Length: 423
Image (cartoon, rainbow, N blue to C red; front, top):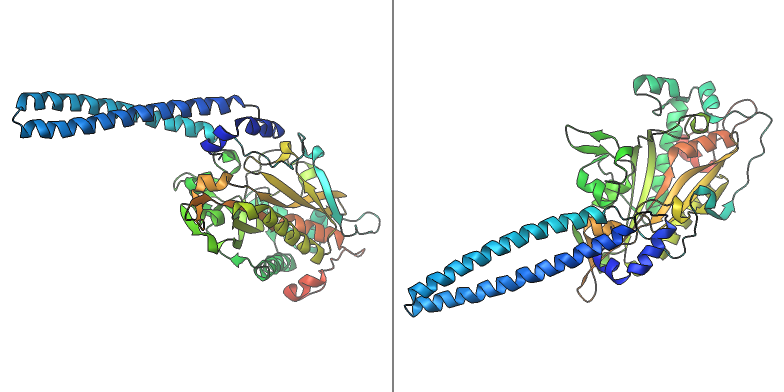
């Protein structure tokens, strides 16, 4: 959430940068600033009346001491009237404060100055490609067919138990999934991230803190009886560990990683382009999260991107790094890089990670601050990234490493975890 002070100081710049995100409700900027000005005026009026009331209170004591009871009673009546005025002004202030908050949550984060123009994913910029696309034999099998043939992932059984988008991993398929989780966690801890195991449900305050609510309410699974949400990503509970917290500057950066299952309703089409593991309601993911000083956040973003790239290199997957344009960015992000892997049998690129800097957008909602060297409390910057999302990584590994006799070679880096070289 953008701060009012930032909106007041950089109004014109905010409007121009939000145009890059194709935000259509730019009139909200003027509305919220007008409400803020009204709030400030009423606050001053209330403060002036309080000062007047305090002065009268002193006079009442003096009048009683002088035996001027009638004048003192008149002053008491005057003080009571002022008290009523203050109470009315406080009610008005509360109403305006709520109106301001209702508008602020509708305004997305401003994109960083380096974010390119564009409306859709077609306008994103490919900044790097790595690895080699595999050369397969004629008519390779897509991962959903090969997984069924080898009986390692059962989509029909998952649909029976829960519905479409909830696969069942079996045998060596389950071991491959678990091996990837352990491999990614080991790599993350070796890179300096502290592993945490967070809850996989969050309350409304946590969903608001990281920007999923109210913006993505329709994409989250909700448990009405307990008023809890299943998490769409470990970013939500891990970042919220620091909600309403003041961190000492010497303790920054904070680097956490965590494995969780993730749940997304993913309303929309389920045609051939989203078959198999390409889009799921439940999937496993490792998340990396950093909390930094503002001046360090973009070097941290690059560090996180380099780390995610190292995982794809280790897995020997062909990949590309994509800088998202303004129109394809999330509501809360200031800058995002997507990582995609090439899935050979489908002949398509699959997104397996997004790495984002949110600057102070989340920390303002979270009231997440750090105490600087000069003892001032400042908003921290928050960042996160998938490292990695398992489902599409598994899809690419299955397709790219299949043999002509319908088996799957396991990348060398995973073999110590799986205990086998082939499925």
